[in-house]
Amino acid sequence: MKAFFASQEETGRTKTIVQIVAACVLFAAAAFYVLRRSSEDDQLDTPESAVTYICWHDNHTFKLTPAQWDTLLKQGDVQPVSKGGAPAATSGREQRGGGGGPIRAVKCPQCGKFSCVLALDCPDGTQVPSITAKGQVGECPNSAGGR
Image (cartoon, rainbow, N blue to C red; front, side, top):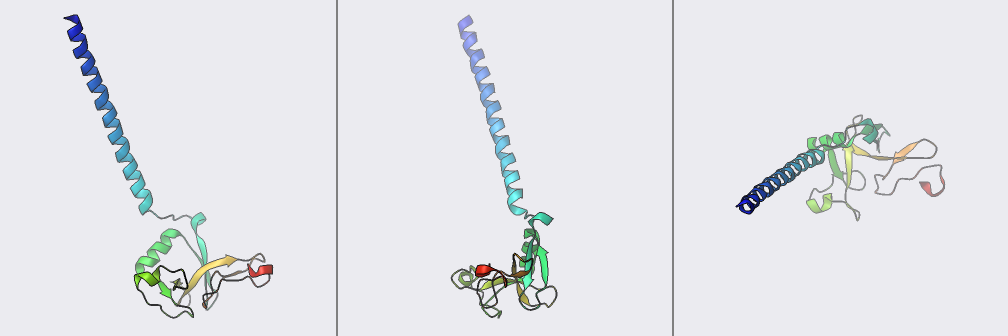
């Protein structure tokens, strides 16, 4: 009889351990999901994450964080423009860029035109557009090789 009760006690103990492990796995999975979801939805909004944009028309420079850029995009203050700065067609294929597609330009807070692109820091301390209104790679004026 003693052997019979020992095996039942062993089965109960094993069942309890399995339940504890299953609860821990479920808790860890839920925590991972919540943390991962919030990190994907939240864009960086720190001074360190800001990048400089420069206007093709008036050389106005300003900094934007990824969160600020995302907000401008949702407000319609980021638009695709074709070479030359004219508004571009807005089909999904053309908006993806690459291969001579439209340039995504931010609306300039000073002149109001969709003409701001990432700024390129030159060795002499100046900043130039990383891509010109003509779709060419930006070049530093006083450096060998232009970059």
